[in-house]
Amino acid sequence: MMLLCGNSTAHTCVVAMLLFLFSITVQAQNVRLDSVYHINEIVVDGHKEVSANQVIGYEQIQSLPSSSVADALKYMAGVQIKDYGGLGGQKTINVRSLGSQHVGVYLDGVRITNAQNGTVDLGKYSLTTLESVSLFNANKTEMLMTASEYASASTVYLKTHRPDSTSLSASYAYSSFHTHKAAATFSYKNWLLLDAAYTSSEGDYPFEYHTEYEDTTGTRRNSDIKMFRIETCAFWKGFQWHTYYFDSQRGLPGGIVRRLSDTYTDVGREWDRNFFFQLTWREQYGDLSLRAIGKYTNDYLHYRSDYPENISVHSNNKYHQQDIYGAATGAYRFGDFGVSVSSDLRWSDLTCDVKNFHYVYRLDSKTSVSAFYNHRGLNLTASGLYRECR
Image (spheres, helix red, strand yellow):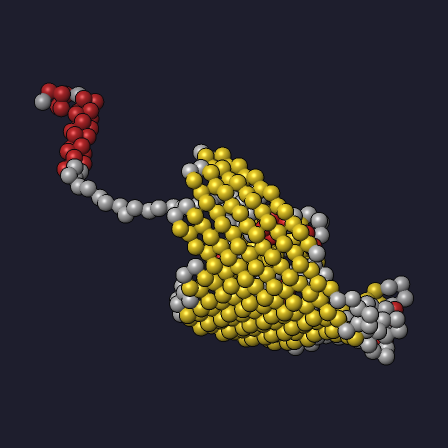
């Protein structure tokens, strides 16, 4: 009592001590020592790629302003997209300037081919059906890879999105130069995906032309396009079926000449019909994994530049090509080691109505053997490829 009444400093210390003890008592009463909280188990399974790769995921694809695969690949490093003019122009990819023929483009693990020029027109493929777009320097390092995947300097993988519900969506857009775009997508549970799109455009856009002789505005001619695409994907257990059809008619505008003469406006026209269906199967039995692929492709191209206005270029040619592809892969893992064996066979042919055109066909077989080792973050891969072509 003497401390509380006679010394203000001692009084303050005693009050602070009493408040501290009271706080400890209140906190001790709020602690429930006999409470047990159960948290559900979460299992995370991931795969780390050894080779350098870039991936555009599903959410990023949905946010892109364009629906073309070529436009998505422009966001990746080390890539050059060659665009040969507007909606109707061909769009190809090369990685680090090595050339488009050295880049393999795969849809759900099956390569897209072209026997005529060895390149893939990325403008024919839409993002609306894709789960992801991946770019690899060299190839992936998975065990169940086909032999063809080891034969490319760089690889682009397009993975189809598997739906998780039943839905229907449709859209229509109208923009400049009499451009109409209509699209519809239907999905049934996680079994079926159907996507269709139609595009029509006059492409008669104005442009400025500056030379030492004139400064005027012209209008682009013969740059129209009509394009229709429909895709169907079906999923059942380890099977995946993909059917694709593309039909287009497009104009090929010529160069800009002095005085903006219309002499070279109708340089050429092109008609395309591309069709393929592919069936893939993949299953795992313990440490043993199996994969099989079958595909048939039928492509038609009609190119015409036979117009009276053209002085030096006259052609009216039709090209038809077919492609049959089959592959089988098996892999077995024992402990930290894994072995994979793959073999595939491709038959391609090309015909044309050009006089004295030599019939072109190719029979291409590849076999690969790969070994994998993974231990405590150390990943080693060795592979060998044998190819025979005639």
